[in-house]
Image (cartoon, rainbow, N blue to C red; front, side):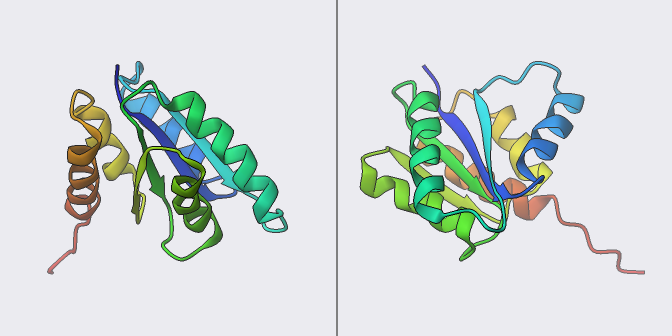
Length: 130
């Protein structure tokens, strides 16, 4: 059993990140899915759809929700899944280094993957000090 990974993003972001991850790692070691929230989407409809996706991803070890922007609708929907009984943890600020770091530590439990995701996201930021 392993942790499922659910990307909660604005339209066209989540699937693009999965595609980029597949370019780097042709076989993903964790089940990864994306729910992309369109601009005019009904949050309740999206919440129901997302809960179904999260339950399908949960193989008994929980679901790591990686959201693109804290406080935005996709993140809020992801966070609300806990009240529906979905065992999850959520990290916002999703970027490709964050996703790849999680996939490189696929054997870790959910509580460790949360910290790994956050450090991967921060560590993937580079500032040119020229």
